[in-house]
Length: 407
Image (cartoon, rainbow, N blue to C red):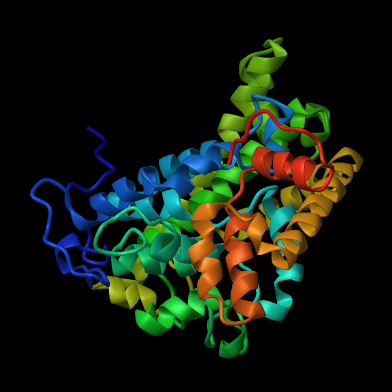
């Protein structure tokens, strides 16, 4: 038994028996808490399965060992469970938010998102967090009683604002806006039906999911960049956090096999990040003594975050990755190629919606204007996997015959 893990939920955790419920009321499950049901519905969703063939940095088919959105999501959920359990938070809620946090990503990662954001500027914008809300509240159409997954308020709140408030005096970051009218339409539309309190922070569980995302991608981007040969272990020896980690491995295991040396060093980097988050959170929680989850939401800053020294060190690592990995010449070439694919497909479907599959025709028929139609096209294109987007582009734009489709 881990003596550092509380046996009961802390008072500032989200209590399942105090959930604000679902947009469409349901009977409680005999065997599962509301947040466990949310987690299970996310795992069984079509959008979750498609993460297998969506990219992180490298296009999905480039190598079997590179992370996809699915493997990244599983890693985020693992980190979130560890941190949440140690802090006495609701593990199932933290896991649910972690598992859903990337559902709204289009094909080709942030490159695809950048392209769609430009294309959607005239039609209400695009943001992957907002698109995730649209997916789990509308586009997953499997249940008899409602569209979407009918998740609890707490899970929806976590998906919408795990990176912080979207609007208001405490809003900051890439997903926030200064003008409420600029909230991405996919989020604004649902928020008008079911107020997610976009001006406050999310629960501590959702904040854990956000930090777990940072931990996971900082770790695996270093690993994937090394595997791709975009930089070397010698380069990482010059950076904070990674340099001391490699030095410690060299001291403890001189002459270690290179692949084991890499793994041992990066697992130490991983541990530094997780332990830092836990220590900072424990200190901040002890100092503030929040009595409820709502007190966490109403704070003027996140309760779950890195220490200032580690945050600065991670900024240095991110700067290195930006130059050597995200903007590496080979990655830039691929970014241009996949941006062209998105830029070709979106206007093609917009000009001729009859090209959309039959199951999308009802949505097209409901479109009242060009904006409505553009949003239907967005839902379709954003839901594509990397390989399906490449195949459809080859079929519809390059007129190449296709034997197989993998949406």
